[in-house]
Length: 162
Image 1 (spheres, one colour):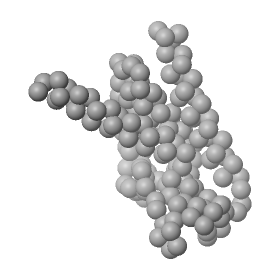
Image 2 (tube, rainbow, N blue to C red):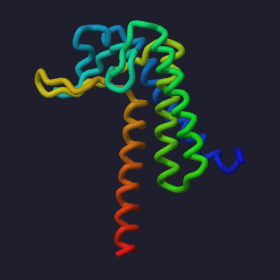
Image 3 (tube, helix red, strand yellow):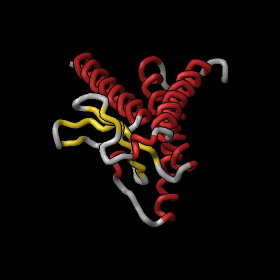
């Protein structure tokens, strides 16, 4: 079984490592702690914030009990996604591996730092999008891929039934 999923585990590890390296580079750079961080382009800054919630800072709690509960819940969801990965094939499996790799990166941070370092800050003038990290990119790409697959499969099944 391990040999069958070696490629999947390799993708997960590569995503995890890309996320870890990017976060370590940002955390170790004193410029990212400034108010506006590092200006990369006219629409992109690297600006470090510590996210104690989930995506986009939602469900940030001061109470550690809630934080720990949320972390356990995220771990359980990741286990379910791993199970779904084992049961899937092709592009769907790749989508799950992207989600798992990103999720493990953020879980590592939640356990090691008690927060997730987010640093990618897209903006247009004074309008800033939510600040996120590399793990969030892979999670989002995996979810968008799964939604696309679902729409295409449902469309194909619906057309076949008509």
